[in-house]
Length: 74
Image (cartoon, rainbow, N blue to C red):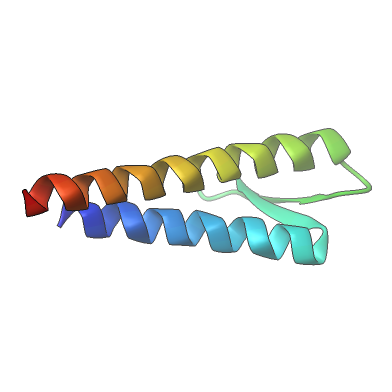
């Protein structure tokens, strides 16, 4: 069950990274329910910081999902 949760999180963040690279805009959460949109050309630093952060989360969530799946299988 834990592996499934991490895999879903990895897929969600990977899709967000894919959409950001395709559209040059990334959606970032603010405090509470606030959502910010960073454009690659208007806010390049925030765009790349958010993109790299989401990429790291996607990779680590996928790695944790694989590790949890193998740990559960043994």
